[in-house]
Length: 430
Ligand code: EPZ
Image: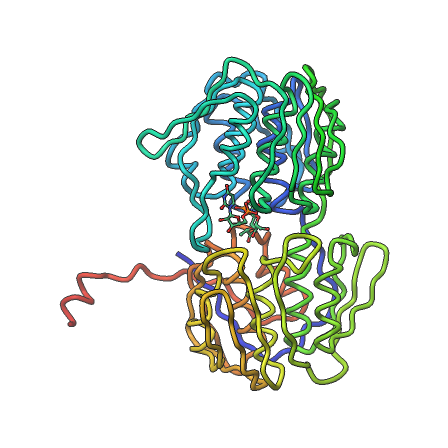
């Protein structure tokens, strides 16, 4: 196990480059199963969720080769298996995407109920509803979902709520189905548009991605291509908040400013200066941070994946801020860790009330999930004294080289191996 040891109080200065988007990459890597020829993906983030996706592909017989940094070759023609290894599937939420791609190509898929960040109940009923609409059946045995169909016929899919994963899975199951599929109440995130662009580049016929109605006309052949994954807007937002929280001045490169609009707008409301360029943003603080209320929404609203990071920032703004995040049942588990650093936050269900006091003190804390880990790292960078963030494996799921990137803009952050605690020894000492 490893932890980050952070000495806070240094304003971040310099330039940081953003990697490929995790939530686009996990979908697109899984979607290579639909390709009838080899393909090459560029700007693939080197993060553990992607490592797991590649292990899953290899375990089923696919060829996955590293071409160079962040560029990989995929040949899935030789896949013989439609069952994802249980111990890999349960590690992350994105393993559900193998249901959509294996069903879309082989009309058969068997994947463990997904794992991933514990944000409360995260069922997959809408994913299964989409598959059923296309003519598939499903059952659950020993923790594994088995989906199967004689054939997939285009149909209308109407989601009961906004679901990113459900929309992605419906697209992947429909792209080779017979006839027209219309997805209504579709999610509109940039990673859904990126997946549709990838599939259309191979010869799929997907229209309307990025709107709430997506029309897919099934095709029989998808050709091999080379495709670059979009930059990660949540990674970019995380560094924007880190610059603001440390009252620094940072240029964040390799971004699509349009994907950052809701994050930029909220930072400006908090009194942070954000300068937008073609493929970069500059973030700096020229005055006091201002308390602000936030409500998370599906894209293009304020993203739930930026909620923990903004909670940290608002502890540094004088006054009362209110954050509402009802996209998930419980995405405030990290608050108890922030309290260890002096934060005054009360949580009632999906609402957090932050009494900003303008400062935090370093302390040993534990990441509870991916974005919570990022929030605690930002808190450590802004706090006085030393902060130790444990359970950084959560953070490595979605942030490529976060310690090196932060060091590159002046952060005092070190990766340290944590000796395994001898539980028996602890027990004896009472
Ligand atoms: C994706 O999760 C992302 N994960 C999440 O990012 C992100 O927070 C979320 O979308 C919302 O933007 C990946 O892309 C791998 P949903 P997903 O389906 O697809 C409920 C991160 O930090 N729901 O949009 O699981 C669900 O419980 C991660 O990068 C159902 O009830 O999110 C949740 O309350 C965390 N039934 C809400 O909808 C379903 O069948 C939104 O979930 C599906 C979802």
